[in-house]
Amino acid sequence: MDTNGSLNEMLTQDWNDKVILVVEDIDTNKIFFDAALRKTKAKILWAIDGKEAIEMFSKNRIDLVLMDLQLPIMDGYTATREIKKINPDIPVIAQTAHVMSGEREKCMEVGCDDYLAKPIRLQILMDTLSRFLNK
Ligand SMILES: [Mg+2]
Image (cartoon, rainbow, N blue to C red; front, side):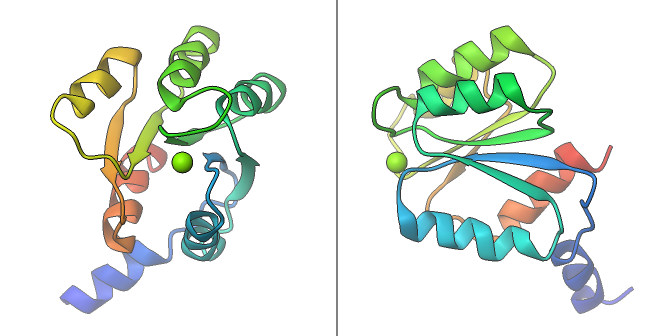
């Protein structure tokens, strides 16, 4: 297969049986995730803060969480820790604009499975999600 073929394949995953919880408080970032994920046919649930994320996670069958770390009311670190208490098997991918030293380690410490730095490139997002969803 040529490079373009595999890239296209990567960008058009079929996840119609998957539910992704996107935790994000900034509208422009929501628009990016919506545009990136729409084609995959995954069901997208949204939460705008850490507290809402925990509520959504408790009430729904979720396959993967995309967790912003800088959130109002309750930050993504605290929310991830709580989510992992509810179900440690569901992957939580942190996404953050603050790339500071030690942040990745802090993410892993609270139980995140991976870490994406904003601005997130579409191909990196799809590649990361594929690793967790295509099992
Ligand atoms: Mg934020």
